[in-house]
Length: 227
Image 1 (spheres, rainbow, N blue to C red):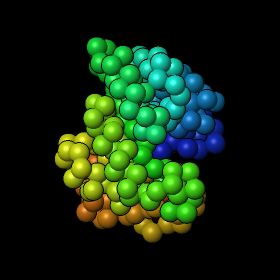
Image 2: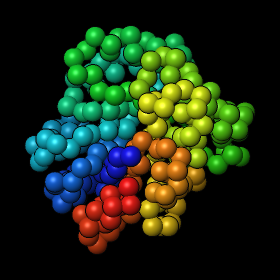
Image 3: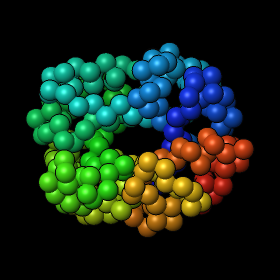
Image 4: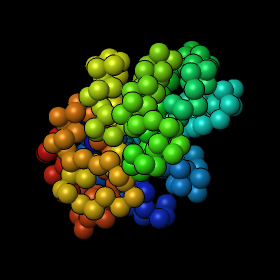
């Protein structure tokens, strides 16, 4: 299992200071929607200039009509990133079109699909999708796998079932990991590192427990030790 640190601090300067403090560690870094809208492509380059070894997950959750998603995906593939995501609920046609139009690109980043946002509880999810999280997460994962994607975003609790329904090498990326029992804040379906490992999660995404820590590097090292 790999560790991905979410760069969700309020300013570019704060995020880059965090990146600097984590140099030398074998981790991924997640750039989210707010940071990318505010700081753009230059922020991605800033990270790579600090340390080329950092791998970057660009978390934009694309959701649009098939050709718009695919043409946007092509532009993302031209950035120095290692993974980005789309929404599985955009449908099989959109996901397949994204993969078709990006398939011939050199050094294509991994492309994964969001199944159910970890901010959903069962009640809120059913209002939108008219089914349980477990059932729909598996359905979305199967659609994503058939479309040729590299994996999905899901909570740790869905990970093991998704691998059973798709493939052991189909990536599961789980946000909202709380390694030391911290507050869940806006996340509903959270897990610790032990649970994530038990559920065969491939990448644990950790934000607040690291960037709100007094010593982010030491905290990250402790999490890596658990992994």
